[in-house]
Structures are given as structure tokens and as C-alpha cells.
Length: 253
Image (cartoon, rainbow, N blue to C red; front, top):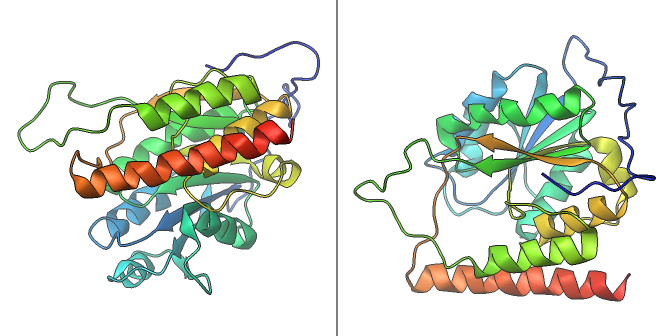
């Protein structure tokens, strides 16, 4: 859980007042997806049935497969930016079209496990947090045949350090792409970052506003980037993006 100081740290909804629920629901799900044809339909189907979800928006960031077609068939509203924008840019594109008071960001590869995202909504809907992050908990902690080994934690470590030093938040999973937050939060922070640094930037910007951030355990499955050449290149891009975000916000202090 984040470190919360006294004084200016106030929840944007009153702490005694939850988000007002409507018949259609106050939650817009925004999913940035690129080449997720194998899992996007299951992801959309799982979140569409969650309580208070009024719309599911998939932003197809110029996929080369059938991601857009399968997302639309599953019932999502599908958007495509004019150019390839990166993860953060795709999320921004989706937020502009969203109508909900609460925004739920999810990755496109969660499949049926996306239903666990309901756990992220309660703290925000009930007025207990301004932003809630998913903290991944494995359903089976024992390695299974075929499991891929992840990275060495360098990107996460950098994001965790930067979030603490520049945003005042102590987070276990600072890179979590599964998070719910009030729309008002996005309206008060600087423009969202366009690339892989979007989550780290959100952590810092929200922390600097003095808002309440919590982490909730979720049993969500997603694709693990392996320890092969493509995996190391991917993590290298992530590391550079996070480092860039930290440098920009260090200068902005």
C-alpha cells in the first residue's frame, strides 16, 4: 500500500461518499491492444459482465492480426489511432472516447482472468481510493511445465525507486497495467505519457497530487516476456521509457 501523508492527501470523492451509481454504470474499461487476437475476445467477454461496467473500449494500436475484428465481435467498441502511438498513446485515445466516471485500464492478454479486475473497482467506487492497482498473485505459486521465466526485475526496480523518490508512493507493482481510477484524476495530472512509461508516470503524477493509491491482490494471468532476444529487447525499451519518464519528472520538480 502507498505511503500517505497528512494534510493535502484527500480522496477526490468525499471519503464519506461513494461514486454515484447509475443504471448503466459509471465504469469505462479501456484496453490498449496490439496483436492480441488470441486473447482479446476472452478479455472483453470477461470484463463486459462485471458489475457497473457500462462500456468496453479496445484501442487497436495498429495490430497486424485480427485483434480489432475479434474485439468487435466480442462486443467492444473498437478504436484505431491515426498512427501507431504506443501503449500510453492508445490509452489516451481510449480515455477521450470513454464516458464513465471511473476508468479501468486493462491489458489485452488477460483472457478469462480479466474478471478479477472487479477487485480493483470496489475501492474507487466506494470512495476509499482515487486509484487502485492490481498486485499480481499467482493462482498456483509452483512453476508449471511450459511456464516462461520473466526478467530480472530491473525495470520494476527502477519504476519502484522512481515512484517512491519522485511521487512519494511505495508500491509493490508500479508497472501494473491493471488499474482503476477516477476520471477526475486524469483531468488533473499532466498529459499521459505515450509509451511504456505510462504507468510509472501515472504513479508519480498521482502521488504528487497527494491522492490515495492502494494495491489489491488479483489472480490475473498475462503473457510473460521470456529471457530470449525479443524479451530482452522489449525490456530494454521499457527501461528506456521508464528512465525517460523519471528524468522528465525530476526536472519538473
